[in-house]
Length: 133
Image 1 (cartoon, rainbow, N blue to C red):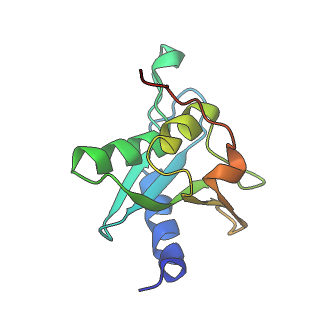
Image 2: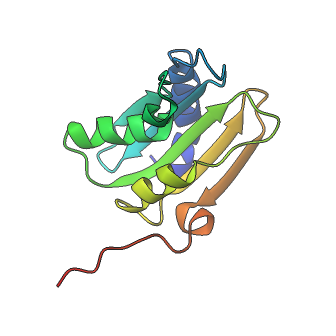
């Protein structure tokens, strides 16, 4: 199946993952679903913590689940939030995602169905890269 044909399924999985969000402080629930090269979809939701800096975004939860199950190459990620406009991943998530696929397709959507699609390299053109000796 062509990659773009999987976008609706990816968005549906992100929407479902959003229902599991733990966001008692912000009430801003986000769901994400990332598509691995294998064809498997890994989901995540944001998980807040009383110590705000320990909060984890939905995008990183989904990515880490994929990596922990052996996936190393990702094709697309969908992010769904209850916002007026589609939201991009935060800077930390952009940096972490860029470690694995700079040409990742990022599908951002609202609960009302508004969508925006960009490549990760458009959202984050100059990620930090460690230069090894």
